[in-house]
Image (cartoon, rainbow, N blue to C red; front, side):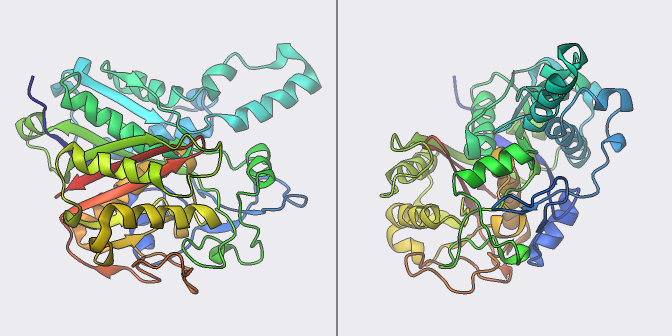
Amino acid sequence: MEKRKVVVTGLSAITSLGLDLDTTWKNLLAGKSGVSEIDSFDTTEFPCRIASQVRGFEAENFIDKKEIKKMDRFIQFALAATDELFKHAKIDLDSLELEKFGVMIGSGIGGLPAIERYHSVLLEKGPKKITPFFIPMLIANLASGQVSIRYGLKGPNSCVVTACATGTHSIGDAYKIIERGDADLMVAGGTESVISPLAVGGFGAAKALSTRNDEPEKASRPFDKDRDGFIMGEGAGLLLLESEEHAKARNATIYAQVAGYGLSGDAYHITSPDMEGTGAKRCMEMCLNDQGIKPEEIGYVNAHGTSTPGGDVVETTAIKKVFKEHCKNLAISSTKSMIGHLLGAAGGVEAVFSIKAMTEGVLPPTINLDNPDPECDLDYIPHTARKKDVDVVLSNSFGFGGTNASVAFRK
């Protein structure tokens, strides 16, 4: 069976820079930071007291009040982002074959805040006070499940959980489902909301987070020699993927073609990347080879760029190995400098940003790149957005456990 072309017909995002894609994108291009002091719990004894929080989100605007109590915040984000996605894609459910419409929304951690909350209930009030909705509130696949149930989407329904590579794997896996003919449309991406004591404490104990608490907006500084760890973020980023034939038949606006997907394992360490960058290199090469992209065709890379001392150097090394001489012409940026690291949702929002950069001819910057690390010596679009026409873009995500994912899009 001939492989089908897969296109992107809808985009949505919820981040610390905005509750919708347009607001987020405008603030991203302006170089604004969404990082601030954590105010949802007492952080006095925590080494990291800052995060990139979504403020002003009202679940009631998207979900019936009686349903909200059945969902932790990451599921609420998924439903709100799907609402925007379907409006953006002009989806008319009555005209579609819903058995061929699937959902692949991943989450790296799922409902950790619900676990924290109901563990306290258990200890203080006993097991009879645990809500019957506790399990559906927290398990990661309920983001996909609730979206499927709300809209009657009866196609492939699944959930990727691959730490910080989750969103990109979700998009790549959904693309392959459509490519082989098992669905016509897929909602794909990631959602996450774990700015909670256990998560912030846990990542802090692993020495993964920045402790630049006195300058929140300057704390996320990918590729800068003064970087000291990542900043946790929250939110959601989704794409509507569709077979090209199906998109044209319903006269949909096509924003991009999915041009490749790669995935690999470092087989090296539970939290550190392979310092030679070989896993990331193989992942990017697999993505380019998927549909025969030449390295020199890539004009922009949305880097994983977390602002960790080791990770940024490894990604730079891997990019040099893949693109060789062309890496001097590559424009690269880390949007995590502004929205922090959305963990399982990172790849979702960064795929959205990559497509927006390509369709609008404006590449988002890497802010806070004041003193470039000598080992990170590529063009990371420092400080301000750049007007540049690019025809093919690449988005990278690398996660704990040595899991790697890359996805490419073409105009």
